[in-house]
Length: 340
Image (cartoon, rainbow, N blue to C red; front, side, top):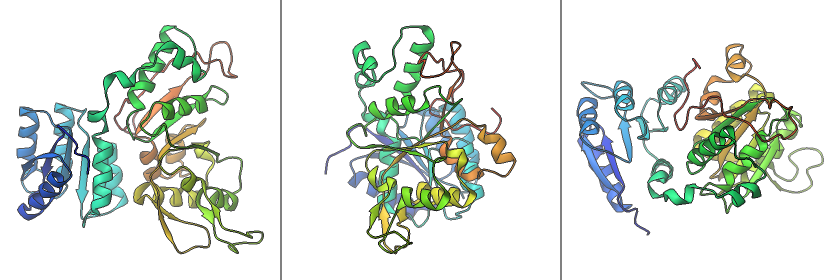
């Protein structure tokens, strides 16, 4: 097993046995850990020294995980915080994401999922700064050219976001180059050697989109004469770009949410559960916050996709791949709240 050098994780849980178990696991995986028994102790630890990630329970005495999360974000918002909870609910999950959590896990913990989540949370620690930079020739190879201030701002954001495994939501009018932004993010990510798979959610009816995304078994429906792998499976180890995500139905949104939460799926007509490791980049030309308020888009899915936002405004000289967009607003590597 390859060791993860110089990565320090703060483990916060009021159950001593659970803290010991987690610290032992982290040591086995090659990470250093520091323990805290409640939110108050954890906040003090963050004030005293840096951590590369935090693994924190929700229900604790003195100061619970949600309050501690707010205080930790105020001290150092760059630390990824993974929330653990035995009270799995959409409300608590959405609240944790809205308040700045990197991700959340439910107890009893799935250790494989725990390790994957911490790998993603600490990826920035193992990424060399020089690897986050593109020279001019590499930038031109992606199709984005120009040396203006807006272009430099665009590249700074792409280079900041790309190494993370955080889901990205790209917004902007049709024709402004959202797919090119997604492609550039993938090209600079740790998944660059993996597949970059694209799906236009507006181009297919719901039943066809389900088969396209998840695949199907032979005989699942009329015309299904053989098993077919879906786009999620094809993108395993890479990036899946979901264009026009706002055009999906509520039923499809629920199925997408399950994959994002559990990292697993079933083919249409199948019983086998398939694990997938996919980064999601979604795009829309609509205001998803308005769609959430109107009940057209699931709030919990919105906050799963809305971890990082890149807003691509229309080009002053017209759309059609102008490639001169400034980034007018972005949340960096922090989740947005609903009041943007």
